[in-house]
Amino acid sequence: MIHPEKAIQLILSRIPAQARVRLALEEAAGLYAACDIPAPYDHPFFDQSAMDGYAIRFDDLKEGNEFVVVGESSAGAMQIPGIKKGECLRIFTGAPLPESADTVVMQENVKRSARKIVLQQVPEKKGLHVRQRGEQIRKGDIAFRQGKRFNPAAIGFLASIGVAHVDVHARPRVSIIATGSEFLEEGAPLQRGKIFESNSVMLRMALQREGLDAKTMKVRDDEELLSSRVKLEAAKSDLLLLSGGVSVGDYDFTPGALERAGFQMIFHKVSQKPGKPLLFALRDDCVAFGLPGNPRSVLNSFYLYVLPALQKMLGAAEPGLLQSVLPLAEKVKKRGDRTWYLSGKVKEGRAVPLDGQGSHMLQSFSEASIIIKIPHDKNEVQAGEEVEVYFIPQ
Ligand code: AMP
Ligand code: MG
Image (tube, rainbow, N blue to C red):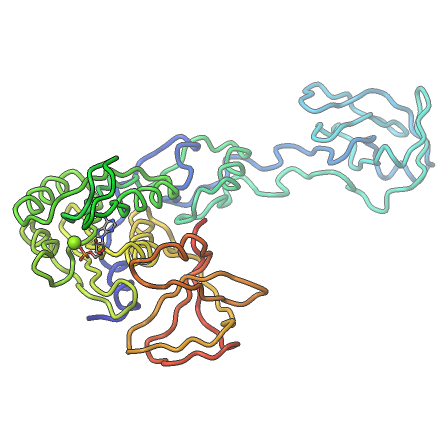
């Protein structure tokens, strides 16, 4: 049995990144940059107005507050008339500044007559309300760093500076195998002794949230059946997630099936609650997790181990959930020397553990926004004491 920190360290140090591919920018949403991306141009591309108003030459203000309007520049305009001493140009937000102008006065600050404006308020400095060419980024400078995620802002930013294709690590092919002989057939009514299978759909949805598809399947607790299915799926997948059958009971065939398919066990059993039987195994062409069967253990293990693993495969610079430290809202008493993970929420800046933390229970998880870590070496954490928390993607 190993500590959770050791487990995560083994995962991150052993998992290779997926092969690199080049994608159209919008196809890369949710993936990570496989290399630094330089800006193809200065941005803004040209000096432009930040306001609706009038473009002037600042130094002309020495001569007075009146300017003759000699033309107009609107967004998208390409032929812009120049201005001479004492002249100005009607200008709109985003429109190119005429060659000789350097300052924009807001239309609210001028009195306009047919051919002339009189400034009611003098701009305090040269360059006011002008977006300078290259003010955000210079051509050739790094616009986006390797390992950062293409979130909506990143996609928007890169599109705005003219990046149309990016290098990423390919999405892994994922297969989910739910093992168990207790599952009802799809759509069948409840029968005593049977249960609704829920882990595969939950994992598939968690992956979908990350922009990844997965195949799901169910296999009875049968050594031969499971072994052949694991062999088959491992050959077609980059990541294999098994749920159930990972402990040491008579019907727990997951570890054996992985070994027979040529996987090397990296660890089996983590000193934590929930999710003690967690297993991580590798083959040259495939990464496998044996997740416990209990639904809460499955989801907790997904967020703390599988998600960072996936992010590592995708080349993320900082794999793992966003973490912070918060004061605990109420005292927690812990038994045993495992690390505990409690689902909770944040209220008034404090971490509140929710009721119903049994590993077979998911209701509290469905309301949770954080996972609270109670360290292995503490038997009691007082109200107000700081604890580590992980933010659950919503
Ligand atoms: P196991 O790890 O196979 O011993 O399963 C532990 C518990 O989780 C048992 O109560 C199982 O019925 C339950 N379980 C296992 N797999 C699933 C699943 N796919 N969906 C819902 N519950 C499951
Ligand atoms: Mg089972």
